[in-house]
Amino acid sequence: MILKLQALSVHLLTATGAVFAMLAMLAAVDAKWDLMFLWLVVAFAVDGVDGPLARKYGVKDNAPEFDGVLLDLIIDYLTYVFIPAFALFTSGLMDGWSGWVMIIIITFASAMYFADTRMKTKDNSFSGFPGCWNMVVLVLFALEPAWWICLLVVTILSVAMFVPLKFIHPVRTDRWRSVSLPVALAWTFFAGWAAWVDFHPESWAHWGLVLTSVYLLLAGVTQQIIPARHAG
Image 1 (cartoon, rainbow, N blue to C red):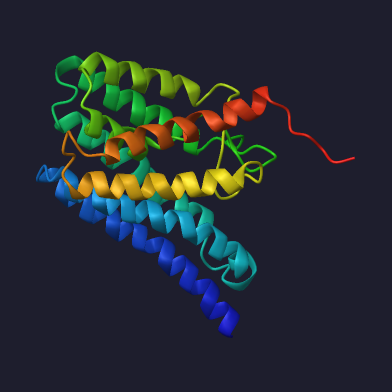
Image 2: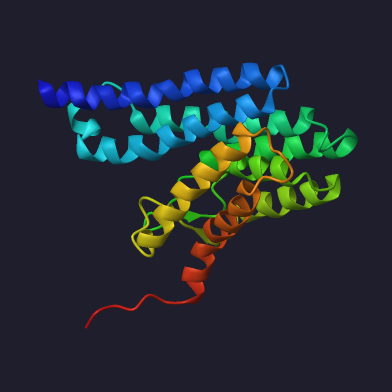
C-alpha cells in the first residue's frame, strides 16, 4: 500500500506542472516576463525530478491507472512550447510577420515531434532537438538579439528536430552525466537568477546561461563525433 501511495504521489507531483503552467500563462498575459519564467523554471525543476522518482517507485506497475508518459507530454507541451512561443510572440522581440512565422513553426513542428515515436535513442538521449523552447526563449529574453537572429535560431532548431542529431538528456544519458547533470543544474540556477533580476542586461547570470546552453545544445552532437570507449 505504501509503495502504491508513493507511486501515486509521483503522478501528483507531475500534475503540479499544469498548475505552474497556468501561473506562467497568467503572468505572460500581463507581460510579467520575470514572473512567467520563474514559474517555468519551477516547472522545469519538477520535470527534472519526477522521472527518476517514477522509475524509483515503479509507477507503471504501482500506479497504472494514470499514464505518466502522457501526463508528462501534455505538461511539457504547455511549459516547453506553448507558453514560451506565446511570450516570444507578444514580447516585441519578434514583431510583424517574423512573429507569425515563428509561432506557427514552433507550435506545429513541436506537436509533430512530441508525437514522434522515434524521439528517443538507445542511450536515452533525444533524436533531434527535443523542443526545449522554454530554455531557448529564456536565453533570447536575456540577450535580446535582433528579430532576424531570433528567427534564424527558431528556424535552425525547428529543422534540427527532424534530423538525426543527438541531444543529451542530462539525467538519463549515462555518457558524460557527471558533467551534464551539474551543467543542467547550473543552467536552472542561472535561469532562475536571470528571471529574478528581470533580465537586467548587466547580470552575470547571462554569461552562465550562454555557456551552459552551448554545452547542453552541443554535447550530444559531440558524442556522435567522438565515439565512446568500451572497456575490454
